[in-house]
Image (cartoon, rainbow, N blue to C red; front, side, top):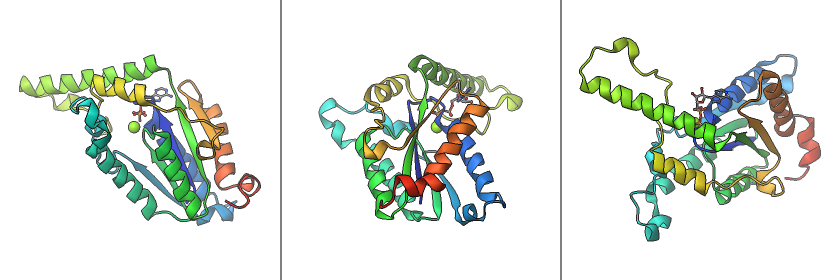
Length: 229
Ligand code: ADP
Ligand code: MG
């Protein structure tokens, strides 16, 4: 399984990019002019696909000295790990869309990929803290609007939240996750190769990044960069 670990601040655009990457990879795999690509199956794993709530990352209810025992986040991580491991194979490309903010966690995933002799890489979603915060605040507002609408018992069928809409993080949870975020470091084996997309990157730039990512995990570069891994 070539493993693609998506990482970035909360509400920085990870899911948006993961979906774009999913579309891009689907096309590459379906491309009849490169039969070698046809061997791959594609998987997208995220908190949403596993029904993991934002609240599992919330430490605010936990006293400081018991933080390491934050069981719900541990359970969530075990679920993600299990789902990833289940599809581990050299024929399966897994896009792991999530915060993936702990370097030890990324290291573990890297080892898992290495154990089945398949490459892994990290796709970092770069976004300013201010922009990401704006996105979360907008989501909080929309959620509040939805709650108010129900309270008012108004018939707001036309204004229901879109199904695609994701839950916001509670403000304190959001701040905490930003504080705890461990930036990927391309000098380490487990965070490399490291690809980066920023909020402003347009379609052309995005395609370029996806092209080099494909080369690293499935193309010729794969053989050159990682001969024995
Ligand atoms: P995350 O998965 O990190 O929480 P999302 O991908 O859900 O973030 O994005 C949050 C919001 O920001 C969405 O409404 C999305 O449409 C918007 N968004 C994300 N990335 C971009 C971008 N590069 N340019 C413009 N809007 C974006
Ligand atoms: Mg997301």
